[in-house]
Length: 143
Image 1 (cartoon, rainbow, N blue to C red):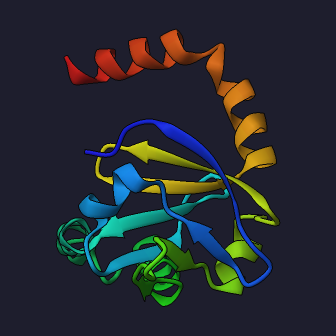
Image 2 (image 1 turned 180 degrees about the vertical axis):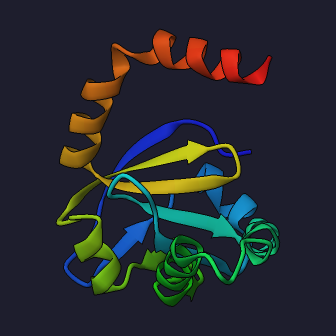
């Protein structure tokens, strides 16, 4: 399970040091792809396989399902850490997530998310005050 948030930087070659506490859970190879809300999703291979199985069930005849799968999978790349615990984030991924230098790496249960620090701060500021309302709506849907 991925928890917490860490502030890091991306160097001029697009390399990010992955926080040490996440490295073992990521494994030798992992997937980075477009996320939602202008961030990147990072999945350990087992979680990626599980997500892929769920997405296979989406109807081929549904335009949104096809579009979502095309974008998610065409932008996905298999990555690994170098000996210093760094991963190279492809330029097209950095561009999508508006990542320049400062980033936030956050744990979200089954995945990591990589955010531009500025985008994360804006997003968090926007939703922080709604946290309890969001929780209430989600719990209402449950019951």
